[in-house]
Image (cartoon, rainbow, N blue to C red; front, side, top):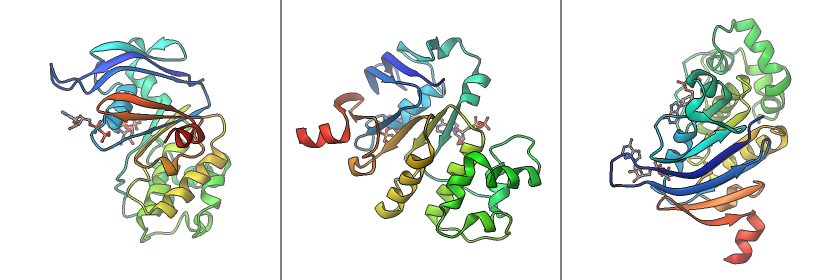
Length: 229
Ligand code: ADP
Ligand code: ADP
């Protein structure tokens, strides 16, 4: 599950000022699409459309062949996890902050879940040993650590589709690469859309599209795009 298609999608916030034009995307279930391009190109807008934050002005978006305009908002949003660029955490434990993405979760359950299956790989690769710090209170976390917690929070919901909306763009490139490498290692089988500034951070994506002024100007793997430069 998690096959995403954009078919001839157009969108504008204001009538007469199109932001995205005739966008065609095909993201097979379980694959990774990277969307790169300059600020203002329409990358975040694209993510918000998949989340059905706004209605399209043209075309359609399907998930597993179903037009998202026909899907109940709640089930669509349950299927999609978005990690934004800036995460505001509660002044509480890592466990509590991860649990926030999971409705009605009890603390012990969350800490167990965080240490268990899906998140374990992520937590255990933390440089600071989150596995042992997950219940610690009053933590001072760096920007990179905060974003790791935000990603873990979203993974705990186990959405078939994960969107990282510049989730690591504000970090130094080393930290960004570390986080994306970890995800690459554990995120087999989940459809992932990574929105990024730099081509260098999305080396492993199955396909990369370069968006400029709302249009796809380049498409290919990292190697293919480099060869064309
Ligand atoms: P990117 O993520 O590539 O930086 P965005 O999708 O955020 O680009 O923005 C694309 C264009 O849409 C920009 O011109 C931006 O000013 C405009 N835009 C973004 N959000 C809104 C909004 N809520 N209302 C009106 N215009 C918006
Ligand atoms: P829930 O999945 O718990 O129902 P929300 O629907 O409020 O929560 O949001 C889910 C995730 O999507 C949150 O991480 C939120 O920050 C993000 N999100 C919601 N709306 C937008 C948006 N317009 N643009 C980017 N991210 C969004």
